[in-house]
Length: 230
Image 1 (cartoon, rainbow, N blue to C red):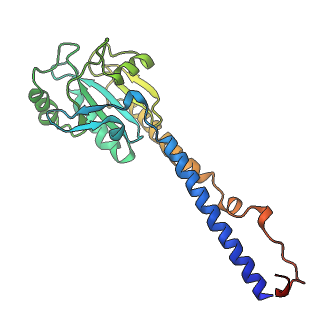
Image 2 (image 1 turned 90 degrees about the horizontal axis):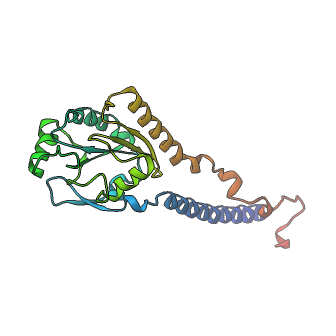
Image 3 (image 1 turned 60 degrees about the vertical axis):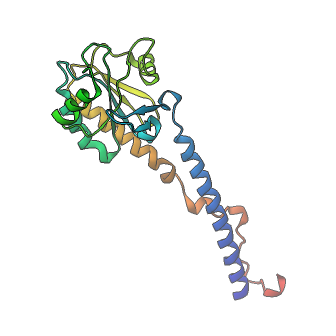
């Protein structure tokens, strides 16, 4: 009797371990599929006033993005302060802020050193700033080509684009929209809520009691069984 019970328990434990491993592999595979980076983001960029190159996919790491085309000598340049405040407020929750300096509107500094002085020294920027790029027209960086196709190309400096963790362009805010506006803050918070829900969905929907031991494999207990029948 006890020998049979022990054998059944061991068998069920083995089945449970195998099922758990299969389920873990399945969840890992599904998460990997969710971590695919879109082609328009899969590009190397050089960090501003540095030789360091970073792939935008690695920088984003499947987190929500706030992308801005910036300029050093623009009436909206002071928005660097508000953008840095957003970065400090939401970085630990997963928001990634990236600034892309551009002279497409003829208001960027002549050298990267000057551009770096404006954002890093004058405004204390700590979020990632790239080398100078094109943000409109045929020469636009692939990221901004995609943004243009999605919600329109920048019409001036300091257009602000929100991209969710799945790579979908969700919002575009004009130059005149302050980074500290309730409209932008609410949009960012919603992206972070959505990301958290997405990351926990697979685990929350998973019921180990249902999956580990299929009902068809459970041996019903029969009082008359003896060790001689095994």
